[in-house]
Image (cartoon, rainbow, N blue to C red; front, side):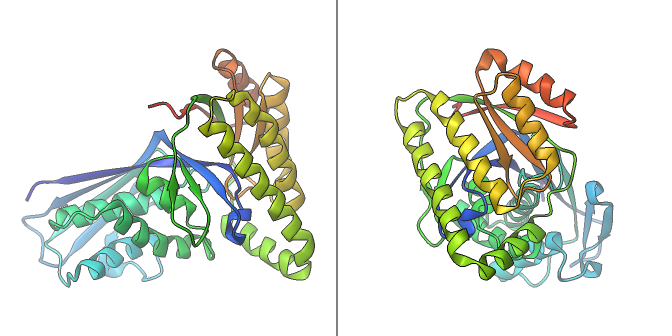
Length: 316
């Protein structure tokens, strides 16, 4: 039985994070500069039904049977086996590696789940469709994030820009005029499940105030999609990013580190900047002209970013 390799890209949310949990639209794109990889190989000398799971990034090296049920990685494997109706695996070893920073808003958890689901299903001779992979990965996302929006598993499973409204069909769209983004990592974990939970409690305490903020985030996301699908200059996205960041700050999901990086990006010539993902750490993104992207990247490093990625949205 040949070895099977599957990969999945990272992702960033351009607009609408957090508000998407409350029914407003969000826009996300894949980031192919980073990825998760799952390699599944038969072990001819191993005992039937035994899978060795190795993931050095999280210091895991154990038999699947010994990994707790609530572990997200094990849940991705077991969920796939259950979906396929497989009770007993051939003896095998699953090795997982990733260049996606952990807990940074780049979708590392969803990417690992998707790479694993694809590798396991292909290894068993039943490769799953993007839709099936997306559904299985969403179940795992509930372990990571409590009340996930579904956007991470969706954009990563389909590896295309998406416009996402919870409970509605996924809308994939084409970015007419590519643009450059600079992603700056604060180096601090982004505790998405905590931020989502805190925001839910705040919303429950004052729903009218938070619904107004969610409405504003939805308006910004819709305007951004109009820009991206038209021949309008992508530069128009910059002010929308700044507006979205102001909303996110008011929602309580920004942080001093994220504010410092967004301000440094703007001072270095970025056309707009905002946090991306769960907030309170993790990543921010800045819109930059192609010729000034390296300048913005340098400014982010100077302001404390531990990692910077320059990516093209809509490129190809």
